[in-house]
Amino acid sequence: EPEVTQTPSHQVTQMGQEVILRCVPISNHLYFYWYRQILGQKVEFLVSFYNNEISEKSEIFDDQFSVERPDGSNFTLKIRSTKLEDSAMYFCASSVQIASREKLFFGSGTQLSVL
Amino acid sequence: AQTVTQSQPEMSVQEAETVTLSCTYDTSENNYYLFWYKQPPSRQMILVIRQEAYKQQNATENRFSVNFQKAAKSFSLKISDSQLGDTAMYFCAFTLNTGGFKTIFGAGTRLFVKA
Image 1 (spheres, helix red, strand yellow):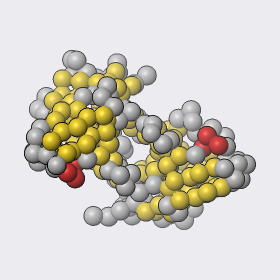
Image 2: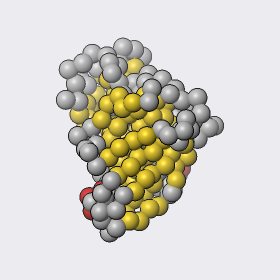
Image 3: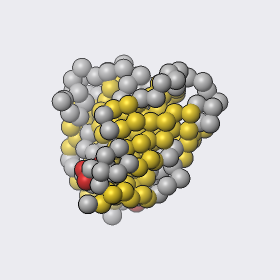
């Protein structure tokens, strides 16, 4: 089965630094998402992206966050100035149709640790 | 606002037995989709089963079935003939059909299958 690929699997950064988390969605998928999961807590929606623009975002997704699909295959999440509370597992997901119509295909996640 | 509640933080079951995980949700909308995702220790998110709210028939996938009670806003997952590989965190999730970019997850139930 095709997979969503995320790199790196682990990222350690200093508070205040910028990080970019990378994802390669499944090639024929049109909808892209970022979710995060703080250790021991629920999975939280961050943002969805369709047709080269953000289609929906949560209150977590503030000005420090941005997403981009720079080259038609990669889908990135940038955190401009990381905070301690940004430490979490970040999951990229994609789907052919809108999320309500079918399942999301999740990547294996990037564990971000902010020191 | 939509919410998903899983009232059982942890459950255990003997191998080969049946276990039911509870989930309730809250929404004023009539058209939506419900999901159960499994997260094994690898932390990858894997879809277990999906239910369209407009369908009265309960979804079934091999050993996994749901009991969908729309009026009660309840969506429980039944795992029959439990296997050791079913040990994981299970998340109930909800997506609106209208503008359904965002999937809302419950806090999860950790299931241990004992040999």
